[in-house]
Image 1 (cartoon, one colour):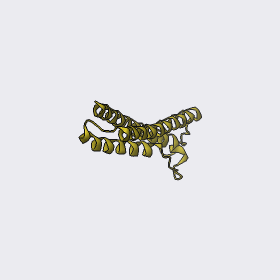
Image 2 (spheres, helix red, strand yellow):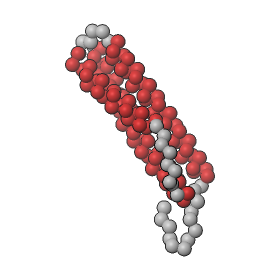
Image 3 (cartoon, rainbow, N blue to C red):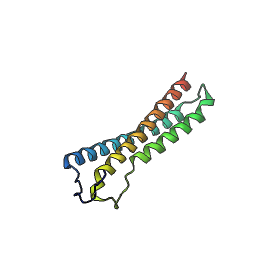
Image 4 (cartoon, rainbow, N blue to C red):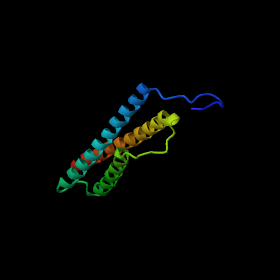
Length: 122
């Protein structure tokens, strides 16, 4: 949002703000579920006694650790107290975009680690 000198500050639309807050909440919950699924992947990896592809165990643990770290970062909520009232909607959009990227990267890593787990079980 750019402000022309002498013009009133544009206020954020309340419906748009509510939509962004709802989407932020949904993506945060998705990230929480991704942490849980990552933990389930680790548990499944540990239960696999004796693994047929032992060499895949370490890369699988590393990838799932990265996945869980990303999901945890996406699930956390930080308080931003110094946001100007005129830029709240812009801040919400940027946060939502950032959280979508983190969630998608975490989901991609989870799919890769599940693939490694399947390969280990053969």
